[in-house]
Length: 490
Image (cartoon, rainbow, N blue to C red; front, side):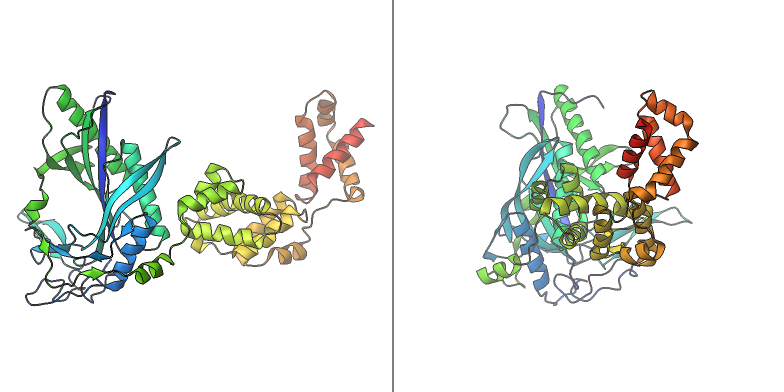
């Protein structure tokens, strides 16, 4: 499509559905761990929607949504209730979904994002609790070619949070960043795996365009079927351009629901947009209202960890670069390993932070990438790695030897001290030990000597390298260079 006309502004709001990590479903005792299970094996009369059954509220799910609301700076309602949302889709066993309408548990929050160096606060209208639906499995008969659908009820009734943003997002890039930061927070507080690929973190988008300077919103279109951050970005970018093209041609944007097609890289019309009154909400008669006392909320608040934004700010204050701070704080397990590593090192805060960051983003990251592993599979405890870092930092071994010792540590589990002692890897810094090696390097490389005397600085690096090779990296490079300069001045 054509480039976006700059006289228009896009307005985006996101609705994120996120499954909570609980042992059982939202309103019954069925296991919520249905991934990989045979269809319709995690079911009971409640999640099958049988007549006469009564739902019971999952307290752990309520704790999870309150924790989420607190992490997103929301106000937690002391009084809320569940409602019936009526619609006739085949993946809804009862013909209605237990959700929340006018009295959600969490409201009026915000999440800060940063795009191209500009920080913006995106408002969060509400976070409410509901139950997930069943899954439709679409098939084609191999003999007749006829299409048909099957229903797997395992997912039905799984605790589901809906996190609704304000229409504060102004670009597809901001929408993607909002989702990345939201997922990061949910993982940090441990309430969800938040994987779009696995379907436990799903996003719908509402998008409209208007001329810059206008205060009224344009006609809103909802986009569904986006299963990755890239798909969300591309779908919003396409839809922004589509709506602008309609307005530029003198047309009118229709309010509707559209689906994103990855194959065709375009949105496709699905149905006219429903309104709240279409769902005929009314209070759920089988569930009591929720009254969340201050003591309950404070007990949940005590479980809040330091969140990514605060952690990044603290790392920056320790002298780390934006890249270092952001990368180390990206995942909570990585940040926790980093902090344990810092705690095991000696010296002031800045020294410990820099040493730990250098090794975490250097050798540790290289090992994890090579082994396609996360930090929880790294074989060395932070205290073990700290022992090696200190040996390199205080000059007991060279940085080159340190890398070799690192490889032996992850392979054998031995300590740095044991490997250094067993293999005699301590750094050679004595001038008496190195003097003979320096003279041999000069005698064996007359061309390099001549180049150095002719003013070529790289010749000195070559000569130092010869001594380092002879000592298998154990020589103190600075002492070697001083001895070389002294000999070559004679």
